[in-house]
Amino acid sequence: MPDYSIWILEYSYSNKFHKSGVIYSAHNEGYIKLPYCYTVIKGNGHVAMVDVGYNNKDYAKEFAESLFVENWHSPKVVLAEIGLAPEDVDTVFISHAHFDHFGNVGDFPNATFYIQEREIAKWVWAMSLPERMRFLLTGIDPGDILNGVELARQRRLVCVDGDMDDVLPGIDLHAAPDTHTYGSMWFAVRNDGKRNSQDAWVLAGDLIYKFENLGDVSGNGGAPDGRYLPVGLAVGSQTNLINVTEEMVKLVGGETRRVLPPHEERLKSRYPSRITRDGLRVTEVALAHGEKSRVTD
Amino acid sequence: MTAWKARQALIGPTGSEQLIAYSLSVEAVFGNLRALLGQISGLLILIQSRLQRDAADLPDLAIARERWAETIEQLADLNVPDSRAEDRPRLKAAAAHIDAALRAIAEMRRTRADDNVSEAARHLNNAYRLMQRVCDHRIGLTMIDTSVSCCSCGKTLK
Image 1 (cartoon, rainbow over the protein chains, first blue to last red):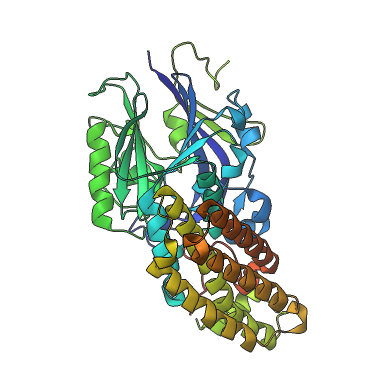
Image 2 (image 1 turned 120 degrees about the vertical axis):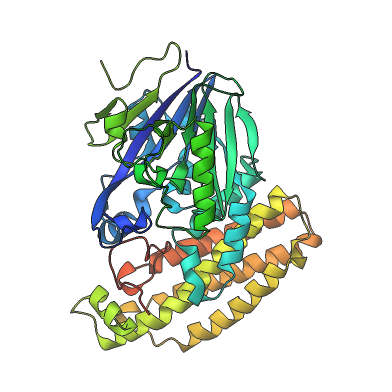
């Protein structure tokens, strides 16, 4: 039986996100629905999350008008759908520092946060550059970095330098420098606890947005049947994005269905899912021993 | 599309020429303060994570200090329309807090570092709140730049 349950929880979505932003070369292909999600990993006595979303309090109107983001709900409401509260979360892995991933740390008072030190250091560098180079700051809220100062003061922010195995038993952090962002990170859950796991899952952060990025053209979730395509929005190198995609796919033995892109709407047809009363999706990827399903009766 | 036309489209038909001109000039001031806020915050994290207390020697701080001085000059030159009269005092106050944060970091070698980190963070939080009160995405003033990750084309084309 798996050691960890894994749920991907939608907390908001944009109904009109330009497709070229998520798939490199998808020019003039219009818009898609882009769910905003975080991932919960529960087991071995821990409740961990990958990313924490953003706090809508300050941005609702602006995002609604500029990004067409709607239906935001708080972690309290979203986590309740799987029987948890934000206070239950003890560990948070931050895939990168964009506002929709690192923007709501204040709602998780008992968690220790892990982030790549490079992610902070290179944002500091980028922020020192002239206004004409502002592209390099896309998606960053300086307020989120400021909230990180308080986490660091409370000794609740761990700046990681590179890969790190068994941060929690069977959960590994993988650095992906100069990809989607300067210090992005992806995560492996070895759900049988074994070093050469036969039940591994990759939580891809924004290194993969859609199945197409994985070369999964048919959407079958098997071995790639097409070419890898980098995500559309990146400040790093396309080469690094392709290389890290290969690393992920290899780690799961070529079974692309085991690489989980949180912004992928079609997760709902690949894994057991339900839509909540609030119109948000709960997707159940794995269930640990003794854990009851949160998507079926 | 020129910057003027892009901004005109964003502000809408009610926007005066003075407001459009102001929005284009204040954006640089705001952008500088926003970048300073993020840069100094990031430095405070790195200082703590590396246990490196002699931050006053970091080259990043000298760059920040130069940018701050440049921003103060730009702020003084702004031609602020009546409808945005409160922007200048708020931005000036935010700049003052950022200055205080820079001074707190520069003091780190002489006093207890934790106190200075707290003091700098307090000033940066104050600056952030003041800048939030100035925010208006129609004139390009936002704490998060999503101009290349959205579909409102032309929003910040220059």
